[in-house]
Structure formats: structure tokens, C-alpha cells
Image (cartoon, rainbow, N blue to C red; front, side, top):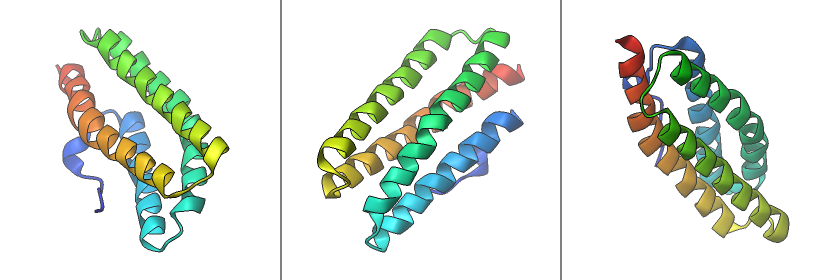
Length: 132
């Protein structure tokens, strides 16, 4: 069940597109590790990456939205905050229970939802607004 980068996800903002591509690559690493029975180890690497990613990427995206007067800025920012909360829940589960199958599945589900719902829909709306 690979979810690869597609050029129709481009926002036209190189900084954001580069960050999105890296997120897809990291998630692909997790999926590949799961297929090889090594998902437990890769979950920790993904969490470490996401800790930095959410700060860097969400800050950049929110700055761009403010600069271009994006009308749904607050809703978009709330989605970012929801992702951070969900990530914290998963990291807490990792600390408490380790990287078992349930955690790997939950992490995969969170990432798939984020990649298909947020980037494919909300971030593309920013791109449409930014281009106008």
C-alpha cells in the first residue's frame, strides 16, 4: 500500500514542495520497513523526523498563508495543531508500550490520513490561493 509523491500535489512554493516530498519519502521508508518486518525500528526514526518537521514545515506554511492573506488560515493552523497532538499521543504510546504492531498501524493510519486529506486537499487550496 505505497503512497508515492505525485506532481499534482505541487503547491508551486518550492520550500513547501520540498518539505512535502521529504515527508512522503520518510513515510515510504516506514512502509518499506513494515513490509520487511522492521516497522518497529522505523517508527522511532519517523517520530524523530516528525518532531523537527512539524516545527519547520508548519511554521513555513503558516507564514506563507499569512503573507498571501489566505482566508482559511485559522482552520488550517488548527489542523496542524491536531496533527501535533496526534503525534504526541503516538509518541506517548511508544514510550509506554514500545513500538508494537498497534503503534505501527496507528502511525500508518495517521500518516495516510494526513497525506491524503491534508496535503492533497488543504495544501492544494493554499497553492490555488497563492497563485492568484
